[in-house]
Amino acid sequence: MTRPGSAETAAETASEQWALVDEGWGREAVAFATLSEPANCREYVALHQLLGIEAGQEVLDVACGSGLAVELAAARGATAAGLDASARLVAIARDRAPEADIRVGDMNALPWGDGTFDVVTSFRGIWGTTPDAVAEVRRVLRPGGRVGLTVWGHIKDSPGAWALEPFTLASREKVANHAAMVSLGRPGAGEELLTAWGFEDVHRHEIPFAWEFADPDHYARALASTGPAYEAIQAVGEQAFLDHAREVAASRVRAGLPLRAVIFVVGYVATKPLDVPPPHDDEPSGSFLAPTPPSPGAERLRQDDVDELGYVMNASRLWGRMPGTLDGLFGLLSQCVKAGRLDQRTRGILVTATASTLGDAYCSFAWGGKLATSAGADLAAGVLLGDDTGLDPAEQVMASWARAVTRDANGTTSTDLQALRDVGYDDDQIMAITVFIALRLAFSTVNDALGATPDAELVAALPAAVADAVTWGRR
Ligand SMILES: C[S@@+](CC[C@H](N)C(=O)[O-])C[C@H]1O[C@@H](n2cnc3c(N)ncnc32)[C@H](O)[C@@H]1O
Image 1 (cartoon, rainbow, N blue to C red):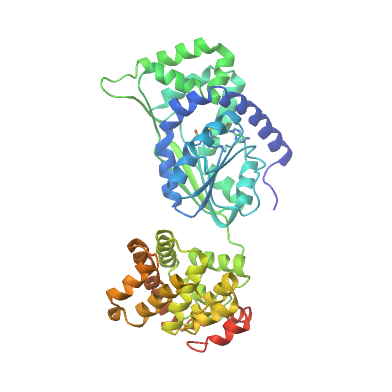
Image 2: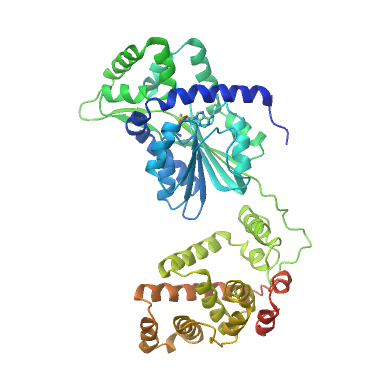
């Protein structure tokens, strides 16, 4: 892909920018983390919401500062990562989100492999002066992954423009650089940049942003902890900067209310295109329904299959009509897996016992294969055929429960339940296991009723014992 603009000039600008900001941002890291960054929380929450950040997603925050956005992404259940050039800010980010993978580095050379993340964010970290960072964001996103960037909007028109005024104490050259940086917020600028780097579905949003401070002293100290303030301090000295900031804020004090500066912030959200081709006109649907029309959700399901399996499953072609519903169904299944503490072998036993009793060939093949991988082909074929001799006593009772629920949910008895308790399952686990079985039945029922055919590639890859065991259901 041809990079827009001169790559050399951009790289020089980027590395100069890095050195400058690193020096400025780390020196008052604790003050920044405690006095300044918390006031940005509205921006983080709003962009996370727009991007739909949720449990199970891999999320990277570029130029993460002291890591509040990383911590909030982790709080939504995401597997979070962050990167910042300042080691002192990164130390605080790691303290806040110990489980997250937070690294010191340059946004122009992200230390992660291609296609690692579902979502990449950057909160006023990527600017008009750092366009190469956008290429790196694109590289580390998986196909279909989403980027969310915020930048300052029209500062002069913002009611809280006064709060940024002390930055203009910096040298004329630095102030001009600030203007170049914030140019990405101009109408059309971010859309143009992201489109030039091959993103699609680019949308611009107004992002809520309000700094609040207890009093002019709090404001002056918070502002002084930031990178642009350091440039002003270099020009006029720290005391003069603080005095000026306090003076600016003094006229903004409101009785009984915090100092509040609402500043316009723009958010860009865009998608990295999928690299799986849309279905051909003559591609079979793999079910009784007509071929699923292309849509971002349907393409995502196709891409996930191609990445994982090398082909598109007929079930995914079918569910491409309702990808959000499939996500929801699998989200519920994940909740059961967590609540029931169901490992891969246990899930394999539950699904093979359920699918074989229902007479669903598709899930019998798919999960018979998975169970064969974790526990051996003979054991998997045995469970498919109702022979549980390879299972331990607790697994045998659980497989019997799956068959009983599938065969006749009204026919179960408290004695069946007691048998589960007797082998060590508590009532919360029994609940989770039963919901898991019911959700698998819903999935199997839709596939079977609509004629989703087990994939030839799936069956061909199975051990013979598993493939031969499944004599029921659709072909
Ligand atoms: C405006 S702050 C944004 C910080 C944080 N995202 C927030 O919301 O407060 C800019 C951040 O970019 C970091 N930074 C600047 N140049 C960088 C580079 N080349 N690579 C990584 N981080 C950089 C600074 O250390 C600083 O933490």
